[in-house]
Length: 583
Image (cartoon, rainbow, N blue to C red; front, side, top):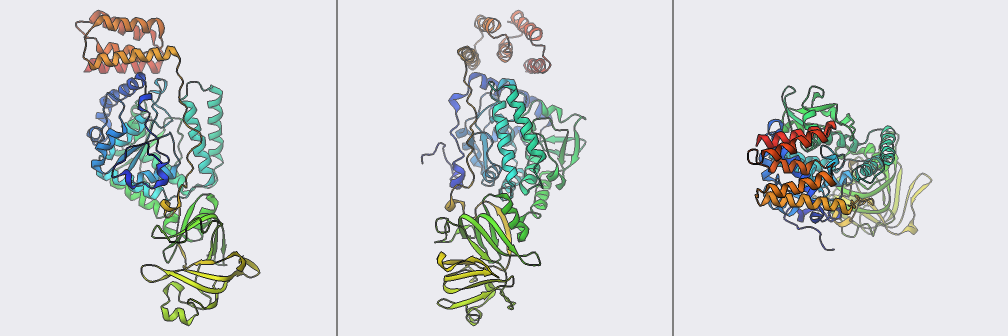
């Protein structure tokens, strides 16, 4: 399949299943008004954030290839980001959380291709290029934070989701899409918001991904760093919101020391945050992340880990004590009276791997109907199979060509003729294949001889359980690419004519012209045809010399102050004029 992006040495390492999420940046579709929105937000942010953002932010803009005057191109960002070991790709809005995290694990920043409309210039619930490029990318220039982000992605991608998590993700994605579409009816937005609220109130017990999602929100998106009395902004959601970056610094927003408690703190994506967490430094972020990771099935495995995978109804992997990994959709786990797993089952395509590399001959096309295997030691034998020497294996009748009967502590019985086995790099046996095999637990038949060859994974215990596939490159796609795409706005002829005016002013600025007559003509067109558009009028004000064009400039100033009295718009205009007069 032809790539729709220009690769580099960082992107070349991406697993194939992630590449399906990458879209070609629709740069030619950005209107001149979109460019003006980018420029306004960046100018305002540069002015204010130079005072309140973490010290890495301003120099980080240059290191990430971010310009104030125009929307960045992915190719340009990548040429610069690769020097610090990162890359950027365009995606279509929100992508599944595990996929998002996995991109981070591969040092790749996902950038939503769209840009907010002028009506949402201060804040948008939808991911957009201002949020991703101007919010996330600059802080990556800080090596300690970049490593936290990569490590967060590595751990977060393994977090097990619940089936409700994906339902919530789809609902949030839908709301973000329709909110940025000017043609959406208000009733449709209200209905979508109510649907999110309903799902949120009926999530059940929080999943691992819910905790990861919360921690990501309170750090990567809405984090503050420093002291409670004098914090600095590093979260991309704050860095890219010209409204909330000011709001968050006020006393109205409670500041809390960052701890693992953030994993249990829910958030509302549609509203300004009433409280924010402050980390003392970026090293502390990694400390808390490791603390959370220690509570995950990734590091604890066991019955709880397998049950989490079953409840998730998604692809997941368990690793046994020998290192063999089983990846698929887990459907059942049998336990003993001590609540230990004694047998597990998957349904549908399943693959076996070792150290994240698929075992030859054990891909999903071979185990296409699922997989099942006992876990534990043999009954009455204290030595686990994986620790048996060749002499031990022979003594217990576990060798090729031998018809044997293996009874496990949990009561599982495996009877059949051993065909072959596989060993790990340390020489421990990790897989035994049987012909004419029957697997039972009391009267329950778990595998019948008529079903073909039985492959038994060897392992005394389940040491890890995590979301996703051990070897995704061999397995293929595991996250579904969203069916609902972001809406492409259809502009009227009148709107297109307005964008032409924006483009004329944009070219005028780049040519450094000083013709009052030309700007007056544009202004007159705005007054008569587009009385609700304030941003282009503000750009005309910026281009007028305060001495040579003082009369016309005062006329523009009066027009903006008298005709745009709505509180938020008026503040945007006043802030813009202040920036002009300051420069």
